Length: 277
Image (cartoon, rainbow, N blue to C red; front, side, top):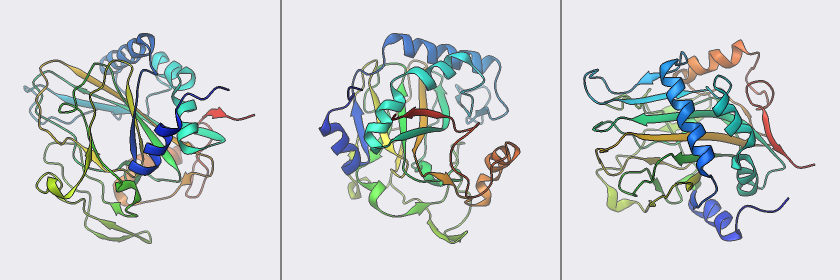
């Protein structure tokens, strides 16, 4: 099968922890995702959340693990170029879905994403990447910023909540045999880091390593509604690895589906999206 990526794109992903990939998603895919989000908002899953406290203020919304609940999401997950791109970035023979989620900010919303890395939020371990796909054109000031090279720090940071106030789920220390730190105060020490930010046109996306720190660097209030769709995918050999109590709600969902600590990311909840024959 023909490669979708240039060698330089793969190089930047491995070196920097995030890479801009241009023009891989046509309007058909973006329209499907927008329809899926609209349908999800009208009929949300139990994981749907409004991160903005003031119900009278423009909201910041999220839902996740919904790929099998809405046909447009399922079509995108299995049939878009996403998994093939992930296989090239991770040099994988097999790609499995880890989880999906989306974010929706209403025009005027002052809520934003804290700096965090995805690897410590859930009970997953292995070689994994994330698709970040905006459904509208986005300037770098309005988007997310990634800290260049932070995926190579060999550090784990305690989960930070997306709700206003961005509370941290615990204290620094050893949890289940691994050391966790509190995420550094990045916003008040911007000169200490090199940030990756891009202007994105329709169809452009970012792929980043699950360990790369990222968040809202510029507190820009959107003038229009904005939609972001994300997918997390894993290379062969990735597995479930229990983390802290902060992940217990998601862990309960996995256990209800028959998964336990140490199981492969495969099967019903983590279907195969791409495999070399």
